[in-house]
Length: 572
Image 1 (cartoon, rainbow, N blue to C red):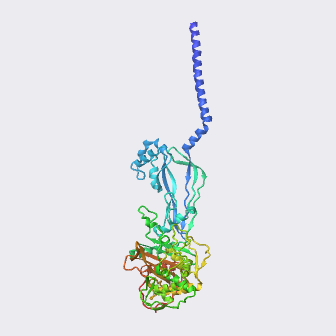
Image 2 (cartoon, helix red, strand yellow):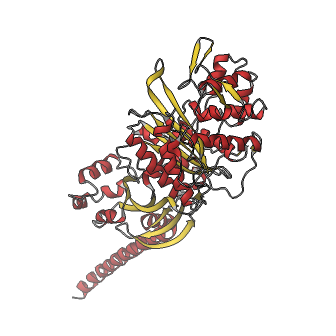
Image 3 (cartoon, rainbow, N blue to C red):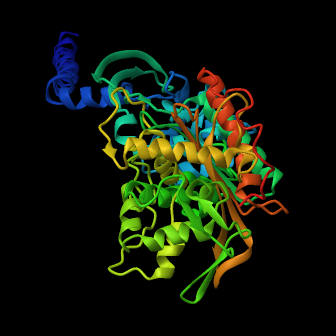
């Protein structure tokens, strides 16, 4: 028995040693592993934990607000939700994708294709610019790897009324047209970033810190008066529809400051819904499109003659027999006006009278004066795509070219250029740079013609808006109005068209103390009426009446001042 005990004792000690060694090894492994995790791999593991739960996310910055001169919003940024996915993460939870079946916002099949196509990436867009309630229909499914991001989308409260002036942005909130493009560096905000903690489903459960604050864009205040913009848009649209015209434009200026109070075009578009957009409607025709101004140029021919002392308003000129042969071209009047004074040259819109004035000048005199009025150069509004117009530069002018220039052929202008030129007449002969931004301090202008000459022109142009003039339909009840009609043959393939026209009217009011200028252009009216006095003058009348009434300008027309004048002439 004692021998058996002696045999078992060594075996027991061996077993205990083996067990002890086993636990020592296990403890050593655990301690070693702990040392590896807590010391050697601490930084790596901490980083891995952070990237799964602590994320750096962008902080969206909204664009500056575009406002009219009285603070009414024309373009604002509204928060929207963008849905994005981490394909690597989403691929690990494919069994949960089925919850998107029948989802009205994100199609399951499309989601699957996108994620599988970019399975090695960590970021892809799913849907951008969603309303928060629409995005929630997707986020409520709690699909791992599917996240949201707050962005901003541009909204235009005035819609198509200001579309070609204000323009629009793309899906990345970058300016594409109009003021949005011209002033994009100022309007654009600068995004920031922040650190957040997300749970296993990707939901933000805590904001940690703002790494870089977002900086919103600067606001822009335009010179546009939204009330006048609506008014001009309505009247232009009505005229284009009534005369079945191809298009049109209208501009209203404050001649004392150079500010653009209204600028409208047809056709237009809705910047809030551009799905079926006709790209031809994007153009701000008042700034980009050129046309020959026709008889609206005659006041500037007369201005040059007055300024040079060649004539006075009462100087007579013989227009008999109503035609004038210049080189191989015959210039025609509407009828034979005989011997008339210079004022009547404007009242009756005599091509012969204007041509004789131009031909009596030094060959370079008229082009030089037209350049002073701003033709052939920028108006300084700094608008994308602005056309400088065309005023030919010649070392020698043929007689027929000088004659054509006097009544508005052989040069090209834009609507806003023509408005600026008439604002010189309204502003006592001073040309100001135009502005689409509200002006706090009126810039220094250039004296183009003398104050006395400008006042004489206004008085002469009042006769055009009378019963004996070509623009009786431009009259504004209670106010004296001065202006000029124009009817131009359009340039088509092969030369001037015989049945396609542009009808214009350019005018200013109140004539006793001119301040506001408006120009209306009706492109290719397809009706029996196509003269400027018939298609453009009535729209001018309604627009200017609204301007004077809205801006509380006192009436200046004495009762019966034009009642004794004769019968209406056919418009030209």
